[in-house]
Structure formats: C-alpha cells, structure tokens
Amino acid sequence: MKRISFMVFACVAGGLGSVSCGGADAGDGAAQGNEPQFSVDAQGGVFTSDDGFKIDVPPGAVSAATDITIERVEGAREGGVGPMYLLGPEGQTFDKPITLTLPITVELEAELGENTLLDAYVFTAPAGSDDFTRLGRHDASPAGVITETPHFSRFQAGMVPPAVMASQHAYPMALAADETYLYFASGGTEANAPADSNDGYIYRVKPGTTEVEAMTPADPDPKALWVNASHVYWASGGDNDPVIPSALKRVDKSTLGMETLVEIGYVLSVIGDESSVYFGDGDGHNIYKMPLDGGEPVVLAEGAGAPEHLAQDAQNIYWTGGATTNKVYKVAKAGGDVTVIAENEGEPAGIAVDAQFVYWANAGDGGVYKAPIAGGAKTLIYQGGSMAGLALRGSTLFSTDMSRNRSVQAHDLVTNQTTVLALGQHFAWRILAPEGQDVFWTNGGDYRFEGEIVSYSAP
Image 1 (cartoon, rainbow, N blue to C red):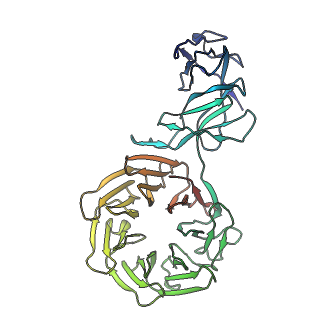
Image 2 (image 1 turned 60 degrees about the vertical axis):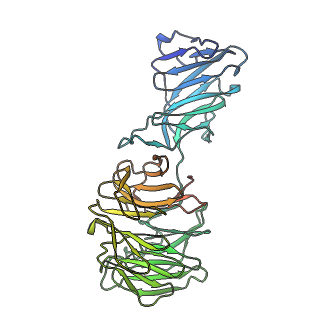
Image 3 (image 1 turned 90 degrees about the vertical axis):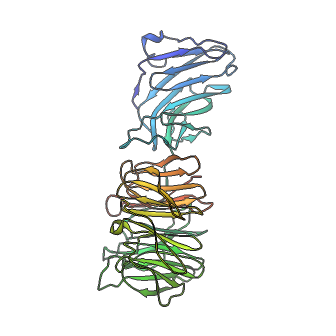
C-alpha cells in the first residue's frame, strides 16, 4: 500500500493539560516516516488534522508521556468510504478509550440530502491483516464517523457490504419470504440457463446460506411471487406472448408439485391473504380476486394501468399504475368503487401501506411519497434518482434507487432521517423486510448473469 503524509496538523489543549508536537513544529507539516506527530501525557489532549481526522485522548488514558504517530494509508477495504489511518505505536493500549473522528470522503454520483447520511462505521485491523472488525460506537454524520478504541491499529470509515446469497443469475427481480426460506425468480445461471432466454425458475434459499434450490422446471418469464404456508404463487408468461399464455401458477412447498390456477391476460403481480389471491393484469388493465385453490377470477378494478406492484391491508388492495396511468389506487377486497389516492405521478412503482398512510416510489421523478389512506395531500419522504422497490417494517421504510448512487435506503418515518445502507448496487429492484429478519433485495445486474440476491442486517 502507498503511504502519503498529511499536509498540516494542529495540536490543541485538551482537558487539564497540553499537547506538544514531536519531531517537528506543527507549521512544518506532517512528520515523515514513523516520527511522532504529537505527544500526550496523563492529562490527555486533542489532535486534529486538516482532512478532518481527530484523536481525543482523555485524562488518565496514559500514565506517562507517550509519542503518537499517524499515517494516512492509500488503499481501502471493501465498503470503505474514507481514508485509512495507521496509528502507532502499533498495539499501544490505553487505560481509558480514546475517541477517533474519521472523515467520510467517498465520491458520490449525487449529493445526499439534508436529512440523509451513510450507514458508516469504523473498522479496525492490525497492520498487514485483512481481518477487519467493526467498532461498536458509530456516531455518523455526513462528514465523518466518531468512534472509540482502547488500542492503536489501522482504522477506516466504511459501510457493511450486503451478504450475497445467490449470484450470477439472469435478471432476478421477484422476491417473497416465509420464516424458513427466501424465494426468488430469475432466468437461471449460465450453467442452467433455459434454451429460451425468456424462461426462468422459482428458487429458494435459506437466509444465512448460499444453498440455492430450484423449485420448478423452466417456466415462461416468472416475474412476481407471493407465498403462504403451503405454496409459492407466481406470475408466469410475463412477456405477453400470444403463443405462450400468461398464467397464475403455484408450487407446493413440500412436494414441489405445480399447478396452473388460471390462464389470463398478462399477469404482472400477485399478493394474497388467508382466503384469496389477488393479481394485476397488464393486458386487460384489471385487478383480479380469486380463491387460493383456483376458480373463476373476479374483477375488482378496471382501468388499473400496468399494476406491477401491489400492497394490502385487511380491507383493501393498493397498487400503482406505472407510466400507463401515473396514478396510485386502492379498492376494497370485497369490491366496490376504486379510489385514486394520487395522480400525475412520475411512473409510480413500489408501494407499501400501514395503518394510516400509503407509500409509493416513483421511477420517473425519483420521489418517495406518502399520502393518508383516508385521502389528502401527498408528502415527499425522500428524493432519489429512479426509485423502484419499497418495503415497510414498523416505522422504517426501505427503498431502492436504480440510478444516482445506485443505493438502498432506510427511511425513519418518525425522525424523517434517511440512512443509506448500500451504494453501488447494480439495479436494485425488489426489496423485502420481513419482521425479525434481515432486509433482502434483488440486484438485476448490468448484463445477463450478473444478478444477485443479497441480505443486509438493518433495524
């Protein structure tokens, strides 16, 4: 790794004592090699560099005068968002934890908003080791991360990379989960890709593992999933091929037996409850309701646009009409008039709902909005680039952004603060946040067989 020296350091009084710079005066610039940048004694002190790096040694942390060296090191661990620093003497311990402030300097395609910050921590490892561990304290701000350590080593501000559960898949997008498995649909891997590039499989994988199992043979373009205790339901034949009819199908989780429940239109989405399954038809622009075991579908809503994203509560089905209508809707599960919640939106996509509000993400104008279920004006929650998926867990709304920083966010609906969980995700589409589990999302990839299913530990 290439080492570079700081330009200017400043030593300031700390607590009851003072700090002296060793090796050279502060005005001479950084010390070279391993010469000390400053000394500290039992009274403690504070040392700050012009790049924002800071050491705060409290009184009583050392019992005698101690020379300290700081080297800024070129090179970053995966997920690094700022410079790496080697503090010496290597392995120096302290009787009280010292406080470090590490700057965040990562270059972003788009600046973060006023109430948005990175989910950044400080990671440490001994010199020469790649075994980095995360320090507990992480007071993050847009400019840096404050942490504590009882010893000297290498330190760097960084983010936790999402864990890859499945990789090298062709454009995975559909997701569903139960207490045991995460389910997804993709066009397969290069090793088992169907002859028809529009076909794909339904897979399952246990969280925390990479043991992916195909539950179905190749099926025409599976693109939406919903799961209950016994079956996985999916939208089949999604490329609107008149020769291969679109259908709603399901597979038994225990026997892997498959059934076609209905062939109809151009099925884009599916969701369900204890008695019924609901799906959106992009050909007839309808929302349908049907018994879980099949039967005659009932039209709940006409003129639904391209209903690719559905949400529900106990009484209603909610959906976005995409660029076809640029509207957000709801209709009672029992049937009745359709209510337009919002109109003149910018290609609304992902949708979620709680007891008071409907939330949606616009792919066109990059906004994440909410509006009261009972009716009323919409409110902007977050401004991104091209928003895709939404998932709600408690008071946290998760979203994916396919452009700008290619990021995944967590929006705290109580404090109105947004935390960016991941950067540089290659077309993050659908996202799930099951209660008591990790957050999961699909990365479509820039090219075929670059898709991933990933997980992230988030509140």
